[in-house]
Structure formats: structure tokens, C-alpha cells
Image (cartoon, rainbow, N blue to C red):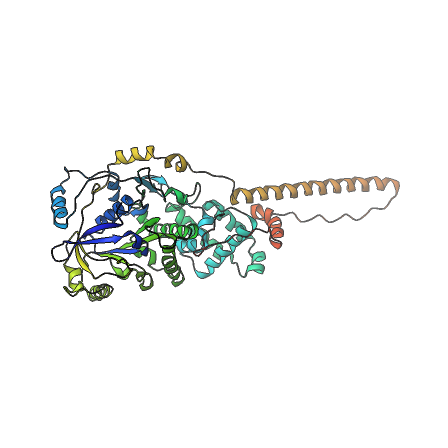
Length: 512
């Protein structure tokens, strides 16, 4: 098995092999370029290379084109002859082949449902998803703190909605302990939850949650599994798309052990349309992403951002991306020219050509590339003819894809959504118990008052005095939330002794 991935041929005559060293692949990477310049094919050939080297891959299929990784290319394909000509030019013995693919889909339509629990997502990422203000994010943190302390599992949206109802109804008591908890903020969060639910977020949250072992796996023949997330429909909800991928990245960071500098990555994670992660993101979140990118490589995970322009990625993150494939950029405006100059300056200069001019001139399927060398230093930039893929270029037909889903072992595990007892049912159970106890106490009081009245009537006939009636306690009319208010507030005064630990992006640490 090779210790590198062949990217293409570089140099003036494309005879200089451009390769990505596997032991440097966890130093992250960038695939950039304008629409239609060949980014998707580059992503496809990298996924093939990692899989062939026994490295699992997770990627998002934004255009719906990458499902062809599951089928072999054929000589009947219209681009077969140009592919073979390109292969001969760069010295590649092109062999067509299919690769082991598992399809995933947040909506469960084009792949196996992929879910996370609300608790695992955590308050920081949820606040980002819901676009909450700082004050509203504070209230979200209070809600999660209450759930963590009291052992209330937050699995799906109805659990969070039920907890927020209780928080709103008991805002005064909670404010004494945690600071101002405004009912108006709770209402704003509930409205945002409704928006996310209407966008399909309800499908994301729940169980069975994704087991990371199901994406970090190799097949019996030693090839790494390629996990493809159907993202063409998901892109209609860009915040949901970006938040989910960021959550998955944070889960990998929190759950995987340190491995130092492995001979090859444990997983390579491709983040397509990377600008969605950083658009309008608060600085605190960008700082966390930079921290994760810097540290996750020691867990054996390589992260590759795919975007139109390197300027879409913050400088602190861009500086972590050692392996780069830059397809053509257009420079029609002053801003375009500034971005082009900036992109060119991030490469190690090649004295044979001007990098900025080369980035404008390269054609479709061609790029300027710079990979890390054996010492971990960027090599000089080279004009590179990207190799053709071995798998099918373009999507699978719907029938073949549906058949693969039915045959996949993941279908039995993730096909049906579970709904076990969690915060919603537990809070409802407390409410029912509190209401039953209140009803019982009221019945006992009414019986006591009845006996007292009867006693008074009897005393009228024997000349005895009458005692003063005890005042009746006010009847609680607080409804569902009011019925459990006393119960849960009393519990909040103490502690269950349970402490939940959250990670760098607020996600839940699982038991280890």
C-alpha cells in the first residue's frame, strides 16, 4: 500500500508527480476555486486515494454528484478518451474501480438518518444554529445547566421545548440563582426552535444518535469507508448544515484519543461550502473552530475545507491548512484582485512562474498545488494537471442508490427513530404526580372540613361552642408548569451530585 496519494502531474510538461503524503494528511488542507473549475473532481480523487489507503472519509455532497464514488468508471463514459489521454500525460495507469460508500441524510430520504441528541449538541452550537442574542444564549445555558444538574435527558426538540416552558414559568426563582432569566427571552428561543423545526431540524435531533465508530471504519478488504452526507436539500438551511458538521467535528475532537503523528489519518473530514461555517459567526465561535483545527490533528483527523475563495476562511484557520489545491480564481473586481493577490501570497513562490497569474490561467481540471514535504514544510507551488477519477463521474441513478441503502448494515441500526423516556416525559410525570398529590391533599382537606361542619352541627344541639374553621389553602391554578413548580424548585435548592462535563464547543462528554 502506498504512503502517498497521487494528485496529478506538475511542472511545465506535467511530468513531476504531485503527491499528498499520508503521514502529513492530518495537517489539514484546502480545495479552492471558482464554480466549474474542478473542485468536486479533486474532492472525489482525494476521497478515492484515502479510501484505497485504508483511511475512512466523511464528506458532504452539496451538488449530488459524489454518489458516483460507489460505482466504477467505464470505457463507455463520454470522457473516457480524454481521461486516458490525461492519464498518459501525467504517467498514471488509470484503473476504473468502485469504492465502499455509506449514504447518510439528515432527512432520511437519500441516506440513512443521521441524528444527534440536543444534549450532545450543547448550548453553544444550538445558540449558533438558532441565531440567539447574548442574553438569549445565557438563558439557553441556564436551561442546559438545570437539565445537567437534575438528570433530565435532552434528546429531541420536544424535550428542550418542555424544559423551556418550565424555565419560563419559574423564571423568578431561577433568576435568584442564575441571574436574570426573562420570560421574553424564553419565548424568543421557542419561536426560533419552531423555525428550525419547520426547516427539518426535528429530524436531526433524537435517537439513535450517530455512533462515531460507524463512520470511522474500514472494510474487510482494508479500504476505508467513504461516508457521503446528502447535502443538496440541506443547503436550503445553511445554518443547520454548518452547525451539524461543526458538531460532528467537535464530537471527533472530544471522543477520539490522542495518537500524535500517525502514519496515516484515522479519518479525513471534508467540509464543503466552508464559508457557511464562518459567515456571520461570532468571534468566540471562530476562535473555537481555530482551536479545534489546531488540536484535532493530534487525534489523527485531517480536515479539508472546500470553498470558492481562500479569503472565505479566517487567517488563523487558513494558517493550519498545509496541503492545498487551488483551482482558477476570477479577478473581475477590485476585491477579486485583492483576494487573488492574498491567495497567491500564501504559497511558497516558484521562480518559474507568477503564482497570481497561474491561478487565473489554469483551466478546468488543472490547479496550482502545494503539498507538505517529508519535513512538514510547504513545497513550492506547481501548476498541476489533476488526475481523472477511477470511480463514476456523476451521480448514481436513484434505483441503484435505493438498493444500496436497503442492503446496508446501517439500515437496521438507524432506520427507525427511537423515543425513550427523557426530559419531556419526566417533567410530565412530575407534573402528574404533583397534581395527584395536590388533588389528594385537597380531598383530605375537604373531608376534614366536612367532618368539622358536622361536628359543629352536633354541638348546636348539646349547647357546645363552635370552633373557628381553619382557612382553606389557595388552590394551585398554575397548570402543567405550576403543578411541578414546587417539586422542581425544591430539587434545585440541593444537588443530585451529578455533574455533566462539556467539551470545547459545549458538546456533551460521553462516559469513557
